Length: 463
Image (tube, rainbow, N blue to C red; front, top):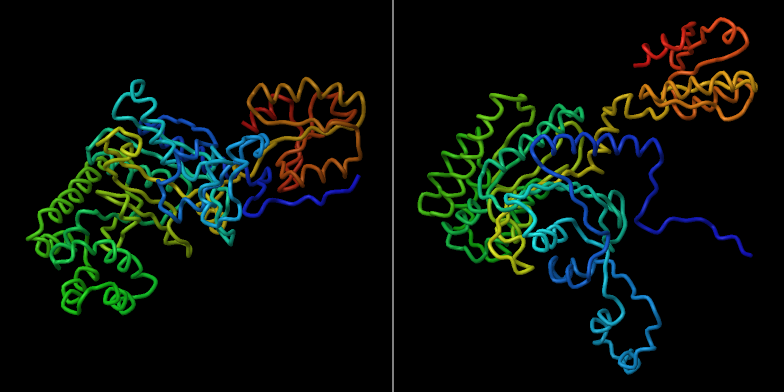
């Protein structure tokens, strides 16, 4: 029998125990905040019917969906035997014959499918969150995987802008609890961007406009101007656009400027009013709760996939390390229309958990508790010590302290090396003297300090 060299499928990765403790620290912190705001967790299957997913992400997105091959013998079906494999145009026609299921591409489309299928069971507005893996047949590269986790929170069936304000507070609280001290929540509104396209007489080029100005950080004003000219805008259009793109000042000053610029656009003014309402809600809510750590910034250049969003849009960035966005989302008016349930508005945001992990690692923000699995190891020198230790290890567990008894008698050096390798902060040494006196030796693995304590004394200390 030949030996197979173990390897990972490209674009996937293993997570070690230490990594899992840290990842769960992020998920548990975010989930706790979601629940505080009234969101309940759901899960959807890892794979969906292929027809559920196709046509929802555009042609490029459809190419990245992982199809699952049907089981059974393909050529046993007479209809399939006659298929012309030589015809290159038939490749797309082959897919439905050999694949009826696919791994989910994101959590949004399965959520839309869930809402429609459960519409008679759920209460509107329906507030849900979901933390699950998704799969994309993308080209793997640094920071981009074929399997990764998404962390989404959405509410459907409510037009209230209170939802948008609460998402800002959810970002504020969750990221603050994770230890971030300097981060920005950027906000814009699709209606403001539509209004800008209207006043320069190019409403049909709104997508071209926003795709270009969304790159301001990367290519600068000259680069944006050049791209706009290539996309059908004139120099006169750019004269009107530049002051808007380069809008500066406080949020209030930007809103005042926009009211003047968009005076002739009803759509644009509605977008301004929506932003103002969100800011008012945030002000009211923080006066009775956590202070606003986040820098809340109106950013006219923020676009975030405009085909999809219809109202407020968000993006979150940390200012402490060089990193892309660590969260984002927005308002959409017809999430469930793709499955026949029309005009159900919703709004949602997501947390980029993988990027947040990298940020916390770089800033050394994971608390010690997020790096500890077992809290105390009880040594095992011989049969008598093992017998004495068995009820003690269970006492610790009953008290909610994670504890291990070294599983066999071994030299102290080996047991200490085990504790070091697992980052166990305390070791209890039990020898003949300890059994006789009832006072055990507790060693702090970080300081090297040792002290004699009873079991109850150790329990009190570790709690």
